[in-house]
Length: 248
Ligand SMILES: Nc1nc2c(ncn2[C@@H]2O[C@H](COP(=O)(O)OP(=O)(O)O)[C@@H](O)[C@H]2O)c(=O)[nH]1
Ligand SMILES: [Mg+2]
Image (cartoon, rainbow, N blue to C red; front, side, top):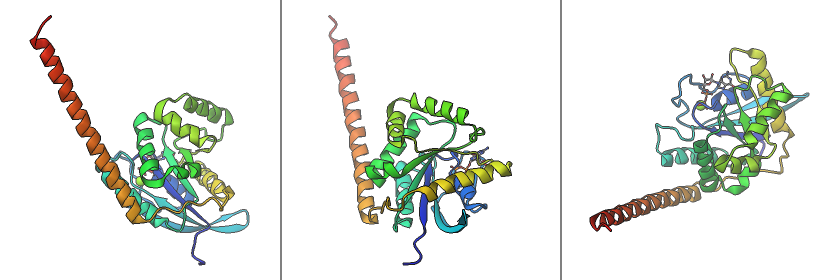
């Protein structure tokens, strides 16, 4: 099978985090559509395989860009389904998941990632996941990077949980399309990292049917929980009313 890429990387993250810009910086040309507004333009999965030179050798790198997690235009179920298609696109194996975060890493983002691991990928993918911090102008400054890592370490809740699995797998880039040098260096940072990865560690996404089943189970569970919450609220309200009804 000569057509399996040397490396396959999938970009995931919130809309506007800079996934498509990362994908372009890595590819070395503008292949993925970038949006200046906060609305998503990557409605569908986009994948491209490029041949990239590194230290005298050439590598084929499959780059998969995806829809934003937490995209307001789509229901969570729709987003999961589209991400499942992205996984299917990588059925020959994923070497890295690049979790793109801009200058903020919010609780909502972290919770969305949590669902993603549980429902779509399975926990083993966490080990293949690297956080890519975008818009980081001082990405070449070790002090600024160290300080930012310290800030991330102080996160709590879901963000803390995710980051504790990520450990030191953190890349800092600035894919500023108006700064060619920064853009080129950022692309190189990601490429160097991908090439340095052990190819033995490959994740083969589960077959589509299994993923679909997991998504519907998750959606059903969410509905059940919402119903349960509604019933509890009703009971509480009734209890409060009853108490008001019989003073003393
Ligand atoms: N300065 C700077 N701008 C960025 C960076 N990454 C993304 N952007 C800008 O942020 C906006 C959203 O980026 P995009 O790649 O479309 O985000 P996506 O929705 O995650 O794919 C665009 O205007 C990009 O030019 C970065 O690292 N530095
Ligand atoms: Mg995009």
